[in-house]
Amino acid sequence: MPAVHYDSYTDARAHFKDLLDAAERGMVATVRRDSGRAAVVDAERLRHYLAQLCPGAEAVAEDGGWSLFFPGLPIAADGATFDAALTDMICALREYAEDWHDHLSTAPNHQSNWGLVQLVGISDDAQLRNWLVGDHEPAALTKA
Image 1: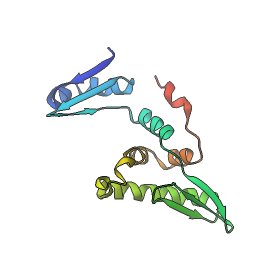
Image 2: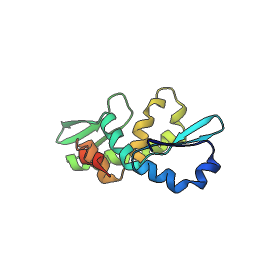
Image 3: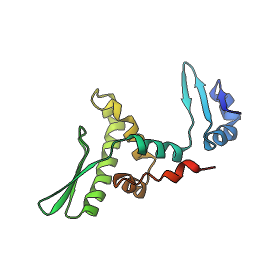
């Protein structure tokens, strides 16, 4: 079965295990609700994909410390060491994601940052750290 589609949330709820199983296997899994449609996806697969698509931060050594920033985004971090700057950047990313959910998602210059916000939301700190330093964990796609 290449895809699982449910035409109502009532039908999807009755087949919730099948819906989740399909998503975990990487199959297309959707639920229609009124005029909209939602996709159910495996979070780790989505995280891996978004980590490849979202441009990473740039790092600059300056004044005996490190600065990290995302060109074109109001997200930056500083630290006395590179590790400290990474930790600060993870906090800055989480704060930006909160602000995006709270009010920035409707701002024209922030709407397109949905992918970054999703990546932050489904990643733990270690995964964000790996992404920031360029480790995109290619083995994640081999999930059975």
